[in-house]
Length: 189
Image 1 (cartoon, rainbow, N blue to C red):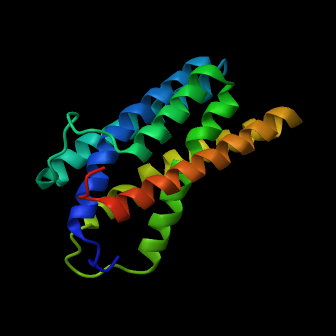
Image 2 (cartoon, one colour):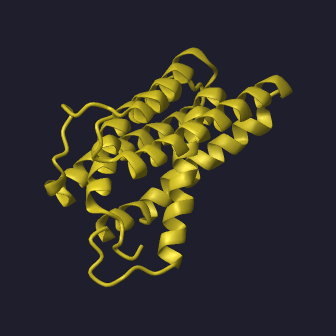
C-alpha cells in the first residue's frame, strides 16, 4: 500500500466493517453453538471474540473515522451479512462456515500481498495492516481454514456441493462489498 487510497473510501470501509463484524461474530457463535466437538467450538468462540475485538481496535486507532453503530449498512454489507447469518441459522455447521469463510481467506490473501509489496514510510493505513497481518489474525484465519478443510473432508457429496455453492455466493458478496466501498464511498447509497 503506497498511501494513494482516498482516505474517505477507507473511512467508509471501516464504518461498514465496524457494522459487519457484529454479524460475523453472531454467525460464528451460532455455528460454534451447533458443534458437538468442544475443541472446535472453543476455537470458533475464540475467532468470534477476536473478530468482535476488531471494533475496539478500529475505535482506538481510527478515531477520526466516526465509527458508530448508528451508521446504516450499505447494500452490499447488508446482503453479505444477511446471507451468512441466515445460512448459519438454517444450515449445517459446514455450510454455515463455508458461507462466511470468503471474508477470512480474502483478508489473508490481500494483507499478505500488501505486506510482500512493502508499504511506504509513514503509511496512514499501517495500523490496519498491522492488525490483519498480526500473528493473532493469521492464527485465527488458519484455525478457520483448518476447520473448514476438515469439515469438507468429512462431508458427503451433497454437502460438499452445498459448501462450495455457499462459498462461491459468499465470495461474490464479499467482492460486491469491496466494489461498493471503493466505487461508491461517499455517494448516496
